[in-house]
Image 1 (cartoon, helix red, strand yellow):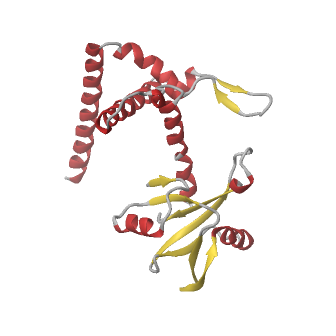
Image 2 (cartoon, helix red, strand yellow; image 1 turned 30 degrees about the vertical axis):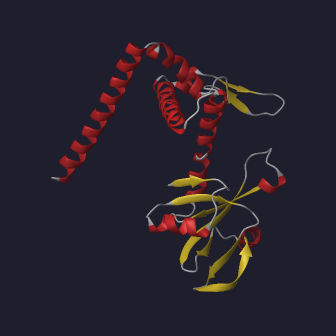
Image 3 (cartoon, one colour; image 1 turned 90 degrees about the vertical axis):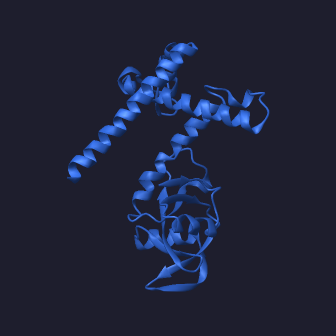
Length: 229
């Protein structure tokens, strides 16, 4: 599913995703208004997202159906933000989705936070991308590709080397929050560095990764082929 934050707005855009067969879970701004599908018909006036959330809470409704572009029925879901430091306007999270099970939207949206972690490591805490002096779109595209690939390899190394067992959790007295002493990325990146320290090692490592991917693909194809027959 496509997961997105509040900057991804526009009914035409969401309608286009549906037409292309793409499932989505998008967070909504609280001041947006939508037409509601209620008891088998379209309500004439548009209702604010916050008002819908209050109504759902009062009636104990898990979700409501809303109408996009006058014809597409999708689901509206609201959930309390479990972040104790959330600002007043962020106490409740509003989501719009076309998933078959609307309640899956809340679980999936939590996954979206991983891209924020990726941005942090790309920009500052890792690769310092913002300090690049490269000019030219093609050069920047290549740099992004290399860093994204390296980031993925670092995460892979961390997972394969038992990150959760190796890096202990630590609880801060002031906030009561529990964090691991080192992020999955930094743990994996430290393991990755000596394996790609020069061009020869890098090419050997990439070859190994690609061969592993190809073998996994072949095994998957064999599994489906075998079960089909």
